[in-house]
Structure formats: structure tokens, C-alpha cells
Length: 188
Image (cartoon, rainbow, N blue to C red; front, side, top):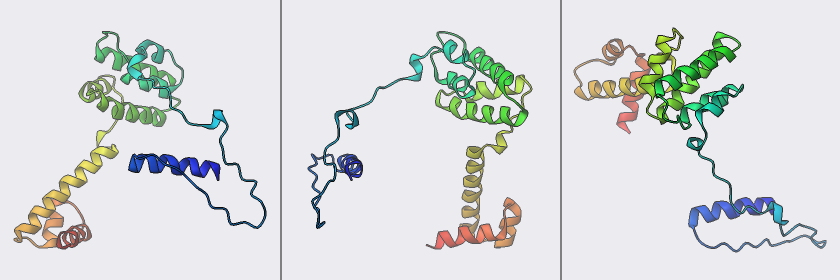
């Protein structure tokens, strides 16, 4: 119960931002043996904050752990050219990856993190220059963007009311059921 109350405290504090005083009402027949206080090392008093920009790119590139190497994209480049850093990250990942499928996974992760530093173009260029295969069209975020774009076009065509559902599906390259689903959502 003590740990549940600790969770409740955190949730209530975050939601309401007010001081919290907690009570548990015990209804058992026997005297309670429930722990009601946390020992000092169990009390959450804060956390240490580490910024990846405080870590040198070199220290992360020296790692043998792929996830650590990938995090180098978010580290301090120490005035090093971002393109060179990306190339070094990719070189290191190529050397560590057991197979092409694993390498693609690492490249996908790197591409996602590169967005946080606005290094998407440079990362894609380095991937292409190195002859690595990463099909951006297989990327989840790309696919979601495509779906949104297709949906927007279907909505415009449905509102125009000049084409049949079948014709819209054919023109956009989606199923008739997809168009019907979007039409259903529009009517709500």
C-alpha cells in the first residue's frame, strides 16, 4: 500500500499542483501491520539531469554499444562538421552491425534522432553517399505522413461531390473501404 500511495501522491500532485495529505482508512478486524512510512532511501526527492550535449561525440563514438554510438548524433560535436560526425557514426555502425537487417534498424534509429538536431538532410545524404540502403518510404513517420496526405485529398474530393467513391479510390490508390471510412468520419 505504501508504494501505491506514493504513486497516487505523484499523480495527484502533478494533476492538481496542490499540497497533498493522504489518509488510508483501515477496516480490518485485526490490528494493521501495514507499513505507513517510507525509509529515507525509498523517498523520491529528485533526480540527476544529464544532457547529451554535455557528452563529447568522441566518447560516444568510442562505444561498442550501437545505441550509444547512435546517441552521438545528439552529443557535442566539439566544432566538428556535422556531416563528418554523421559519416563517422555510420562507419562505426557498419562495423558493428551483425547483418544488413540490424544495420537498417540502426540507420532508422539514427534518422529519427537526426530530426531532433535538424540533421535529416545531411544524414540522408551520408546514407546515400555510403551506398547504405535505407528506404525512407518504409519509415513509419513517412508512411503516417503519406496516409494523412491521402486522407486530405480524399476529403477534398468527397466534399467536391463530383466523383464516385470508386473513382476517388482508384485515383488516390486506396481501397473503396478506405474512402467509405473517411466519408463516415466526415459525416460525424
